[in-house]
Image 1 (cartoon, rainbow, N blue to C red):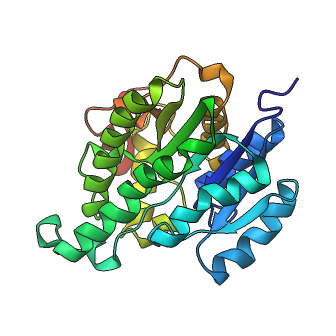
Image 2 (image 1 turned 180 degrees about the vertical axis):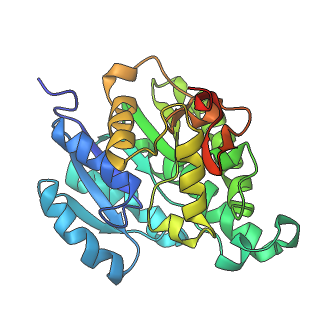
Length: 273
Protein backbone atom coordinates (compact mmCIF):
# COMPACT_ATOMS: atom_id res chain seq x y z
CA UNK A 1 0.00 0.00 0.00
CA UNK A 2 1.23 3.49 -0.85
CA UNK A 3 2.05 5.88 2.00
CA UNK A 4 -0.57 8.49 1.05
CA UNK A 5 -3.24 6.11 -0.27
CA UNK A 6 -6.70 7.48 0.50
CA UNK A 7 -5.42 10.87 1.69
CA UNK A 8 -6.79 14.10 0.23
CA UNK A 9 -5.27 17.54 0.51
CA UNK A 10 -4.93 21.14 -0.63
CA UNK A 11 -1.78 22.70 -2.10
CA UNK A 12 -1.86 26.49 -1.74
CA UNK A 13 0.57 28.59 -3.75
CA UNK A 14 1.85 26.21 -6.44
CA UNK A 15 3.08 28.60 -9.16
CA UNK A 16 4.81 26.39 -11.76
CA UNK A 17 6.85 23.22 -12.22
CA UNK A 18 9.85 24.81 -10.50
CA UNK A 19 7.94 25.49 -7.27
CA UNK A 20 8.93 23.65 -4.12
CA UNK A 21 5.25 22.88 -3.59
CA UNK A 22 5.25 21.16 -6.99
CA UNK A 23 7.91 18.78 -5.69
CA UNK A 24 5.77 18.08 -2.63
CA UNK A 25 2.63 17.60 -4.72
CA UNK A 26 4.43 15.16 -7.04
CA UNK A 27 5.77 13.11 -4.14
CA UNK A 28 2.34 12.93 -2.51
CA UNK A 29 0.64 11.96 -5.77
CA UNK A 30 3.23 9.25 -6.41
CA UNK A 31 2.28 7.80 -3.03
CA UNK A 32 -1.43 7.74 -3.81
CA UNK A 33 -2.77 11.12 -2.59
CA UNK A 34 -5.56 13.12 -4.22
CA UNK A 35 -5.34 16.89 -4.09
CA UNK A 36 -6.54 20.29 -5.22
CA UNK A 37 -4.20 23.14 -6.13
CA UNK A 38 -4.83 26.87 -6.01
CA UNK A 39 -3.86 29.73 -8.28
CA UNK A 40 -3.88 33.50 -7.83
CA UNK A 41 -4.18 34.89 -11.38
CA UNK A 42 -4.61 33.89 -15.01
CA UNK A 43 -0.89 33.71 -15.79
CA UNK A 44 -0.43 31.18 -12.98
CA UNK A 45 -3.53 29.25 -14.12
CA UNK A 46 -1.96 28.63 -17.54
CA UNK A 47 1.13 27.17 -15.87
CA UNK A 48 -0.68 24.91 -13.44
CA UNK A 49 -3.27 23.44 -15.81
CA UNK A 50 -0.73 20.93 -17.22
CA UNK A 51 0.40 20.21 -13.65
CA UNK A 52 -3.20 19.41 -12.71
CA UNK A 53 -3.27 16.77 -15.45
CA UNK A 54 0.04 15.37 -14.21
CA UNK A 55 -1.44 15.07 -10.72
CA UNK A 56 -4.39 12.96 -11.84
CA UNK A 57 -6.67 15.83 -12.87
CA UNK A 58 -6.28 17.63 -9.56
CA UNK A 59 -8.99 20.17 -8.80
CA UNK A 60 -8.00 23.79 -9.41
CA UNK A 61 -9.33 26.63 -7.24
CA UNK A 62 -8.80 30.37 -7.49
CA UNK A 63 -7.53 31.66 -4.16
CA UNK A 64 -6.05 35.03 -3.29
CA UNK A 65 -5.00 34.71 0.36
CA UNK A 66 -5.31 38.49 0.69
CA UNK A 67 -8.99 38.40 -0.30
CA UNK A 68 -11.20 37.95 2.76
CA UNK A 69 -14.20 36.74 0.77
CA UNK A 70 -12.20 34.03 -1.00
CA UNK A 71 -10.64 32.88 2.27
CA UNK A 72 -14.12 32.65 3.80
CA UNK A 73 -15.32 30.46 0.93
CA UNK A 74 -12.39 28.04 0.60
CA UNK A 75 -13.60 25.59 3.25
CA UNK A 76 -17.03 25.13 1.64
CA UNK A 77 -15.43 24.64 -1.80
CA UNK A 78 -13.05 22.01 -0.44
CA UNK A 79 -15.84 20.27 1.48
CA UNK A 80 -18.04 20.11 -1.63
CA UNK A 81 -15.35 18.29 -3.62
CA UNK A 82 -13.60 16.22 -0.95
CA UNK A 83 -15.65 16.15 2.23
CA UNK A 84 -12.81 16.35 4.73
CA UNK A 85 -9.12 16.53 3.89
CA UNK A 86 -5.96 15.12 5.42
CA UNK A 87 -3.27 17.66 4.57
CA UNK A 88 -2.52 21.26 3.63
CA UNK A 89 0.62 22.65 2.00
CA UNK A 90 1.05 26.39 2.55
CA UNK A 91 3.48 27.76 -0.02
CA UNK A 92 2.75 31.48 -0.03
CA UNK A 93 5.16 34.36 0.50
CA UNK A 94 5.41 37.90 -0.84
CA UNK A 95 7.15 41.19 -0.13
CA UNK A 96 7.34 44.23 -2.41
CA UNK A 97 10.48 44.11 -4.55
CA UNK A 98 11.84 47.34 -3.14
CA UNK A 99 11.82 45.78 0.34
CA UNK A 100 14.28 43.12 -0.87
CA UNK A 101 16.82 45.71 -1.98
CA UNK A 102 18.93 48.03 0.12
CA UNK A 103 18.86 47.69 3.89
CA UNK A 104 16.29 46.28 6.29
CA UNK A 105 16.25 49.49 8.31
CA UNK A 106 14.67 51.25 5.32
CA UNK A 107 11.68 48.87 5.18
CA UNK A 108 8.45 50.85 4.95
CA UNK A 109 5.47 50.14 7.17
CA UNK A 110 3.43 49.25 4.09
CA UNK A 111 6.01 46.72 2.87
CA UNK A 112 6.35 45.22 6.36
CA UNK A 113 2.58 44.85 6.73
CA UNK A 114 2.24 43.30 3.27
CA UNK A 115 5.01 40.78 3.91
CA UNK A 116 3.51 39.77 7.25
CA UNK A 117 -0.06 39.51 5.99
CA UNK A 118 0.70 37.46 2.88
CA UNK A 119 3.64 35.39 4.14
CA UNK A 120 2.58 34.74 7.74
CA UNK A 121 -1.01 35.55 8.57
CA UNK A 122 -2.18 33.68 5.48
CA UNK A 123 -1.08 30.45 7.20
CA UNK A 124 -2.95 31.30 10.39
CA UNK A 125 -6.10 32.31 8.51
CA UNK A 126 -5.94 29.30 6.20
CA UNK A 127 -5.82 26.97 9.21
CA UNK A 128 -8.66 28.90 10.86
CA UNK A 129 -10.90 28.58 7.82
CA UNK A 130 -10.06 24.98 6.95
CA UNK A 131 -9.98 23.53 10.46
CA UNK A 132 -13.65 22.42 10.24
CA UNK A 133 -12.86 20.27 7.16
CA UNK A 134 -9.63 18.76 8.49
CA UNK A 135 -9.71 15.15 9.56
CA UNK A 136 -8.35 14.31 12.99
CA UNK A 137 -4.68 13.44 12.58
CA UNK A 138 -4.35 15.74 9.54
CA UNK A 139 -0.99 17.30 8.76
CA UNK A 140 -0.02 20.81 7.64
CA UNK A 141 3.30 22.07 6.32
CA UNK A 142 4.59 25.51 5.39
CA UNK A 143 7.83 26.61 3.75
CA UNK A 144 10.54 28.61 5.47
CA UNK A 145 14.20 29.47 4.87
CA UNK A 146 17.33 29.90 6.98
CA UNK A 147 16.91 33.66 6.59
CA UNK A 148 14.43 33.29 9.46
CA UNK A 149 17.32 32.85 11.90
CA UNK A 150 20.40 34.21 10.13
CA UNK A 151 20.98 37.34 8.10
CA UNK A 152 20.92 36.58 4.37
CA UNK A 153 21.82 39.39 1.95
CA UNK A 154 18.79 40.95 0.23
CA UNK A 155 16.34 38.80 2.20
CA UNK A 156 15.52 41.66 4.57
CA UNK A 157 11.85 41.78 5.59
CA UNK A 158 11.25 38.25 4.29
CA UNK A 159 13.69 36.96 6.90
CA UNK A 160 11.64 38.63 9.61
CA UNK A 161 8.44 37.25 8.07
CA UNK A 162 9.86 33.72 7.98
CA UNK A 163 10.87 34.04 11.64
CA UNK A 164 7.27 34.96 12.45
CA UNK A 165 6.08 32.05 10.30
CA UNK A 166 8.22 29.57 12.25
CA UNK A 167 6.96 30.99 15.54
CA UNK A 168 3.39 30.63 14.26
CA UNK A 169 4.06 26.97 13.52
CA UNK A 170 5.03 26.40 17.16
CA UNK A 171 1.95 28.15 18.54
CA UNK A 172 -0.39 26.47 16.06
CA UNK A 173 1.13 23.09 16.96
CA UNK A 174 -0.17 23.58 20.50
CA UNK A 175 -3.57 24.85 19.37
CA UNK A 176 -4.12 21.96 16.97
CA UNK A 177 -2.45 19.16 18.88
CA UNK A 178 -5.51 18.27 20.94
CA UNK A 179 -7.17 16.98 17.77
CA UNK A 180 -4.05 15.15 16.71
CA UNK A 181 -3.51 17.66 13.89
CA UNK A 182 0.16 18.33 13.22
CA UNK A 183 1.90 21.34 11.69
CA UNK A 184 5.55 21.67 10.69
CA UNK A 185 7.78 23.87 8.56
CA UNK A 186 10.37 22.87 5.98
CA UNK A 187 13.41 25.14 5.78
CA UNK A 188 14.65 24.38 2.29
CA UNK A 189 17.99 25.36 0.86
CA UNK A 190 18.08 27.91 -1.97
CA UNK A 191 16.38 26.67 -5.14
CA UNK A 192 15.76 28.49 -8.42
CA UNK A 193 12.05 29.15 -7.99
CA UNK A 194 9.84 32.00 -9.17
CA UNK A 195 9.94 33.52 -5.68
CA UNK A 196 13.74 33.31 -5.56
CA UNK A 197 14.00 35.37 -8.76
CA UNK A 198 13.14 38.47 -6.74
CA UNK A 199 16.14 38.09 -4.41
CA UNK A 200 19.25 40.01 -5.44
CA UNK A 201 22.51 38.09 -6.09
CA UNK A 202 20.66 34.80 -5.87
CA UNK A 203 23.27 33.04 -7.99
CA UNK A 204 25.87 33.96 -5.38
CA UNK A 205 23.66 32.56 -2.62
CA UNK A 206 23.30 29.29 -4.55
CA UNK A 207 27.05 28.99 -5.03
CA UNK A 208 27.79 29.83 -1.39
CA UNK A 209 25.38 27.14 -0.20
CA UNK A 210 26.95 24.61 -2.56
CA UNK A 211 30.50 25.36 -1.38
CA UNK A 212 29.70 25.51 2.33
CA UNK A 213 27.09 22.81 2.93
CA UNK A 214 28.37 19.48 4.30
CA UNK A 215 26.98 17.64 1.27
CA UNK A 216 28.69 20.14 -1.09
CA UNK A 217 25.58 20.64 -3.19
CA UNK A 218 22.26 22.43 -3.49
CA UNK A 219 19.06 20.52 -2.95
CA UNK A 220 16.38 19.85 -5.57
CA UNK A 221 12.61 20.29 -5.43
CA UNK A 222 12.34 16.50 -5.53
CA UNK A 223 14.46 16.16 -2.39
CA UNK A 224 12.37 18.76 -0.59
CA UNK A 225 9.24 17.14 -2.01
CA UNK A 226 10.10 13.77 -0.50
CA UNK A 227 10.67 15.38 2.90
CA UNK A 228 7.35 17.19 2.59
CA UNK A 229 5.57 13.95 1.77
CA UNK A 230 7.12 12.36 4.86
CA UNK A 231 5.82 15.17 7.07
CA UNK A 232 2.34 14.88 5.53
CA UNK A 233 2.23 11.09 5.85
CA UNK A 234 1.62 8.91 8.88
CA UNK A 235 5.36 8.17 9.02
CA UNK A 236 5.76 11.46 10.89
CA UNK A 237 2.81 10.94 13.24
CA UNK A 238 4.92 11.90 16.26
CA UNK A 239 6.33 15.11 14.76
CA UNK A 240 4.79 18.57 15.18
CA UNK A 241 5.96 22.15 15.76
CA UNK A 242 9.27 21.38 14.05
CA UNK A 243 11.38 23.21 11.49
CA UNK A 244 12.77 20.46 9.28
CA UNK A 245 15.91 21.52 7.37
CA UNK A 246 16.37 20.23 3.84
CA UNK A 247 19.41 22.24 2.78
CA UNK A 248 22.25 19.73 2.32
CA UNK A 249 23.21 20.41 5.94
CA UNK A 250 24.02 24.09 5.47
CA UNK A 251 22.18 25.00 8.68
CA UNK A 252 24.79 23.22 10.83
CA UNK A 253 27.73 25.29 9.60
CA UNK A 254 29.07 27.98 11.90
CA UNK A 255 31.52 29.71 9.57
CA UNK A 256 32.48 29.83 5.93
CA UNK A 257 34.38 26.78 4.74
CA UNK A 258 35.70 28.49 1.61
CA UNK A 259 39.43 29.18 1.50
CA UNK A 260 41.82 30.25 -1.26
CA UNK A 261 44.62 27.90 -2.21
CA UNK A 262 46.84 28.65 -5.19
CA UNK A 263 44.42 31.31 -6.35
CA UNK A 264 41.44 28.96 -6.35
CA UNK A 265 38.47 28.80 -3.99
CA UNK A 266 38.33 25.41 -2.27
CA UNK A 267 36.75 23.97 0.84
CA UNK A 268 38.95 24.67 3.84
CA UNK A 269 38.60 21.12 5.17
CA UNK A 270 39.81 19.79 1.80
CA UNK A 271 42.68 22.24 1.38
CA UNK A 272 45.41 19.91 2.61
CA UNK A 273 44.19 16.78 0.86
